[in-house]
Amino acid sequence: MNSLGKIAMAWAIISTLLVSPVFSQENTIKNQQNKSLSVGIGFPTSLESMQARVGIGAGGFPDYEGSNDYSAKALPIVDIKKPSVFFIKGANINANDGLASAGLTLFHLTYMHGPTIEAQFLVGPLIRVYQGRDEDGNDVLNGMGDIDYSASIGAFLMLSSRSWLFNFAMAPQNVGNNNGGLLTTLDAAYTTSINNKLKLSSGLSASWADDDYMQNYFGVTNNQAANTELPQFDINAGLKDIGVNLKTTYALSKHWILDGQVGYWRLLNDTANSPLVDNEGSENQIRGLIGLSYQF
Image 1 (cartoon, rainbow, N blue to C red):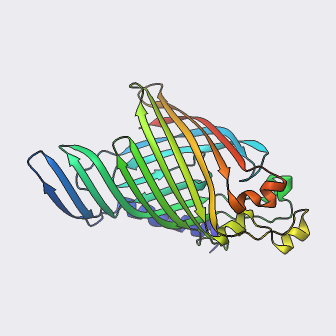
Image 2: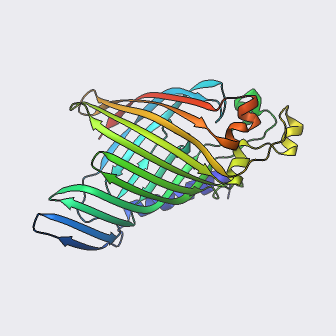
Image 3: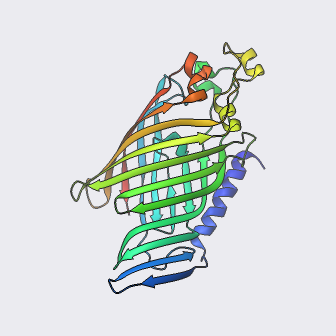
């Protein structure tokens, strides 16, 4: 089975999970102040309705991670979720999130005051799909070879409290090709509503990758050095980048939503010292996106 076939199979598995019944065993402790704490296998029994937005966006992105050349790209805007149960997301400006991702809650710890969730901890499996890299995408990459599309199967841990959201994800890229490697990400975001139409979200992010991942995307082997003007470069595991971002959504009508995103990422340590970055690119990465989506 080729790499795209394996990616399709991975998405079929997660799609089956999302529409199939999941066993849920839950214990709840309540007190006289109408407060409750529940813990269980599966997702919480008190569920909000499903939310869905789909659309298209366009923006400016580096030709490859670490490039100082930019190109315009179109990306799908997808945000389908049943809070506390599952989520499916399309691409955004954070390259560490991949082209698309999907997760399903298999363990939860929920603190509620009346019908309102005050804080929640969720754990479950995660699938991410990554675009890879084409050596024809930039002159610097000529002779480096292509990096195939890949699907990563890992796990996520999500903590939310009112307007705050913290998300940790671990995604080994060992499905669909021979690239391999482990990428872990940590994100924190604060979301507030300015009015009933405008919503703002500011966030911080960081990522860590093992040496296999780093070598695939930022290293230069002896063969690659012979095929390019780049020096040979071996890279170790470590903190890959940190970033900040700002996202906005504005309701043009009941169904049509205007999306805007802008962010800055700084490549760190050996990543910044890679010849693809230090010699020919930049450790400073800026990405922006504006799009239109339809809310169901």
